[in-house]
Image 1 (tube, one colour):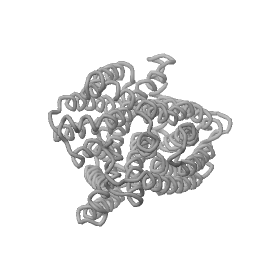
Image 2 (spheres, rainbow, N blue to C red):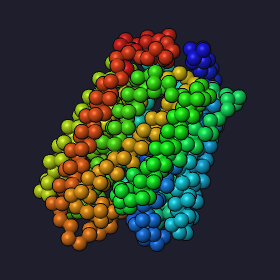
Image 3 (cartoon, one colour):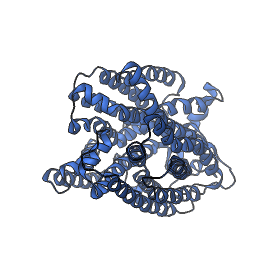
Image 4 (cartoon, one colour):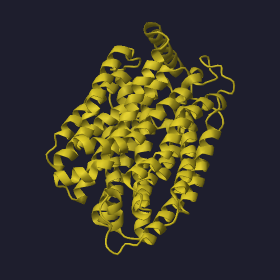
Length: 513
């Protein structure tokens, strides 16, 4: 049955290419890549201007932290739900609706008059971002044949890193020239253009299944559990890890996740997340676990190094920005190349090697001192970027290629959830480790750009930073081992035409993941 569905998807793809010409798949890639760029761009562009926003809206630290947290928590909580909805209703309408909500949230954020309004509207942005992130990868996978999937997903991943790279300098420029509200205006014309292009160019949804009942119990239990977990991670250091509120959130998260697993097991094929994706598909499970560990290992590095470069080495904001650009630029260059290579040699070796290289880069970063040079920081940053560039595209291609065509949305949503949760875990773990060597006040200053607390020594911060990078290196090694555990072959559940060596493929070396 799954094989028949996948053949139907391929037929829709061929009809779309006939109607849109040979360039149809590249048009879809362009449309999807803009969506992939907007999420990280909006995250980093807000982070760099958060101190300015907090000052003008009169927010203290405890309130300001909710501006990025509301966006991140809502996005993470809804990714799986949006992925399932796109499988039921079709990728195109969910993607278009997501861009519409994202634009509306951006407009309302620019009109915010106080912190409460900003937090609320950032949550609305997060709903739109969840729809974009859950469907963009699936759109690309749906449009390209298996033998070109890695290359296309590599280009799509490149757009993510461009967004990460572009956010800080663009945010600083717009805030300095037009004020902080302008960082939200930039999203509106982009969203309008993409919505028009998507309605005009993307083919009619290939997998609408309106007769399928939506799993409300599974969606709500997963969302509540994940939001509780992310809030506990974000505020655990400032509230106290053993405080009643933090422990209450963790207990709530565990209970909701248990309800989610039980509910999904009972619903079987009608579940929002069919558990056989994890229990019977080793590649899917190992690929997502390694993605979670990957983002947990590296995401907080830029935040820590930004503080180190400015406060310890005394660099100005412009020079700091140039140094921090080195990693995402390397990732942007390598992602399409590693994706293209994975189409030919498989993902297992590339992704696993990338994680080991990341571990080496993190260990080298743990040797930085108060007298290190900018060149030394850039060198270690480039090594980390090489590892990340080798890992991301092959791993994404393997995950998206090992599921049936009617579950692409859930696969994309699951992968995006791993990325978002990993980002939150990275910041929480690194912040907690630095606090053990210095103070909670220093961690607050680190993430808010506030003045250093009195009596804080550079040596305390450097010692905490070294500990954070060593632990992150260990997490990266665990991610490499998880990547190796995916096995060499495609899972039996994967229909032949979803594999590079299947009827639509025929690439030498295909079938290896």
